[in-house]
Image 1 (cartoon, rainbow over the protein chains, first blue to last red):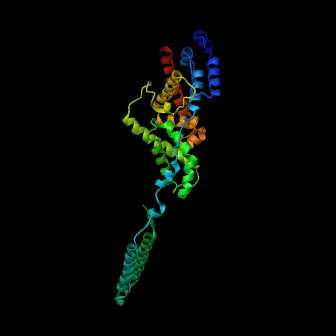
Image 2 (cartoon, rainbow over the protein chains, first blue to last red; image 1 turned 120 degrees about the vertical axis):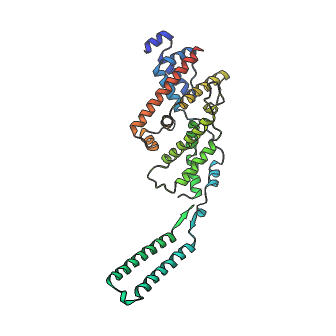
Length: 148
Length: 179
């Protein structure tokens, strides 16, 4: 294909690619082509590939605004303000309800000794377990901190 | 979680990477600083969960690509396809015309515009892979981690993207040669 192209348009791949390399050495950002070279590039895979690679490999020239990092820092959320404790009255209410529940269970269990049967004892134990579970949840929620 | 001064140092260290990648991926430079700020603020928020298993640059590239993608969608809704003769648009603004005559500069701008327009017609993944591979010099494996894709898929996207770019460039070269 290359030989045919050279015969048809009078431009060889070697010449086009050499021109691109020389332009790169001179530090030219984008190669400059004659009409004949453009015609050659339009029909030649290898040369277009080289041109494309050269163009894509170039990094865009950027200007980072002065003080950019400082401006970003100024916009950072204040981490101290974001940590928020759940109000203490929630924990106090949870503890009060827990104590009330434990007290009520004990009063009902010992109010009439005749009712102190095996099945009632079992119910009392289950009530205690539930009470402790609620107490655990209340403590966990009460001591947890949230971020907003 | 870094302190604000530590984070400022991270910003200084990586700001060029973010600006460069955004410059290639978004078509307008008007909002690049805002976008870069958004990238770093997302990074800061995400650092609470950053355990250091991955490199910070991988995380940063991922955020940058997401921000660029959002901006790309926003811009796409706003503006239609730019013509090749629109020399004020996109990449060509970033070129510095040193010791070039006006005719040559115009031609170079047109050349960049061709590549830019061709890139714009690729899919987001193809565009991201091409920019990471060529401009950022990432390996296939690094790109695979950044984009969360298998290495083979990265290769396929790169190959397809380059093929599309080559075809479009050849087409446009042919048009240039005829005029």
